[in-house]
Amino acid sequence: MSNTKKIAGAILALTMTAGGASAADQQFITIGTGGVTGVYYPTGGAICRLVNKGRKEHGIRCSVESTGGSVYNARTIRQGELDFGVIQSDVQVKSINGTDQFAEDGPYEGLRSLFSVHPEPMHLMARADAGIASTADLKGKKVNIANPGSGTRVLAETLMKYEGLTADDFSLAAELKSSEQAAALCDGKIDATIWAAGLPNGSSQEATSTCDVKIIPLSGAGIDKLLEENSAYAAATIPGGMYPGNPDDLPSWGPKATIVTSADASDEVVYQVVKAIFENFDAFRKLHPAFANLKEEEMVADGLTAEIHPGAAKYYQERGWN
Image: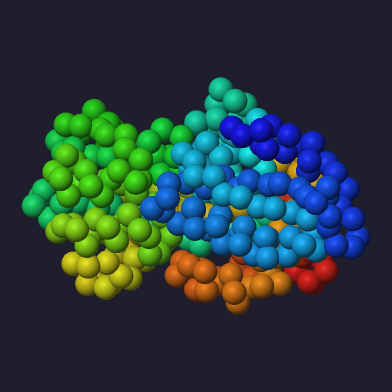
């Protein structure tokens, strides 16, 4: 972690001037994202781009950090080493409650929401020659269940639970990062990979463009029960034709990506970050295809288990949104 990050907490505590910001007033914030081939990284980049656009007025300089994903981001925000993070809506729930991956950490009551972004459908991608048409066919195969600390790993384990699978059912349970999975799939090192990301995303595009990869539909009794018992998830569809070799609409499910911070974050800094997005909303939606269908009223309400940060709440009240 850089020296900038070590003093981030102190910098965020500074009071911002009412007028233009001088060099002495500069405040540095970092957004933790995910692998560079997913949608979290460009999401963080899009936010920073709009925040930095107004830095002469508010004095905030925003940077993006590629990380291990949702679980890492939630934990590192708690430790005071990240200011903001992109995390899955279900990871919000687990972090707040101190369950599953956060059982040893204990409940984190200091997590705060800003807004949600895009839905993140699960992608079960398999080599066309692997003989996989459903989750049941994963038994005996080489399957990537994602790296520990990622939100995808949480989702993979959830999918496996409701489909009656364990890592022991696979001939290999790989723990590859999202940036590694497409090459491993096309090189035959794995037969299938479980992956969650916004639409479209670079990793799925790379895999389906490089070799013959099919995206497997995720539906049925197990998925129905999963959605019934987990309100942080919702049914989703991967549109036909979005990825090469996959012409039909495919049923899936998943969480939403959410932007979070700590209760310790400066109200004024959070206010300015939120304002930068919603005052430039049309520009934000154009910064990535996954943002094209975003609606402001959904972003300030959906998937936000953690309490809204006061800085964000102030802006939303000004807009008449809460």
